[in-house]
Image (cartoon, rainbow, N blue to C red; front, top):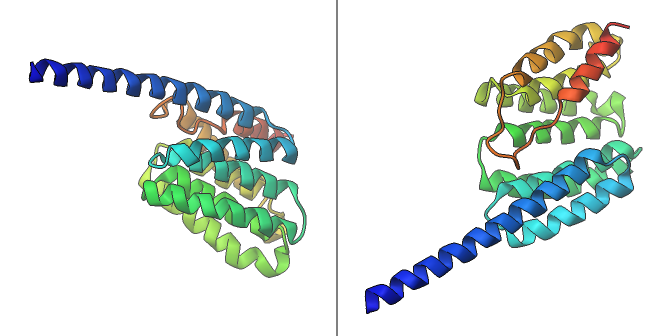
Length: 212
């Protein structure tokens, strides 16, 4: 009798967990889609708040924290001057949380590189070397950890593309990284439908600009 009761309880717990998982996946997919389509800082902030709510309940999953940080980094890129640091600081809080849950994760390293790049825009002349090196180091580490992942190459290519030629950037130097990213997009498969899967369209658009 005890075994039968324990078995019933086990089944109930399993069913509840499965139901919660389905709800979580559906909610994440909805908010990832919203973030992917966001166009301005208001929408990016709304996305960040949505993911913060999810992160507050899913405390052991790095992905909600990753997407909160991504949304805040996108806000930082929309701002100017010292306002950029405010949002980069917010992003770093959630980057650190994601990092604590998933060490040596190439996707999180790309996000760190993006955050460092955003800080350059506060004052490119005084910050370019320090934060540029930081972004470079994060990107290189991401490539080493997950060499088949297209996003480290995509992000690095984008950064070089928009860096003035006088500072070592420009379309010609960005092109090899963009092409490497596009090659990897052909075969790279995210671990799940909730894992990062952005960047391919950005690379295709950048490659067209390289040819102009």
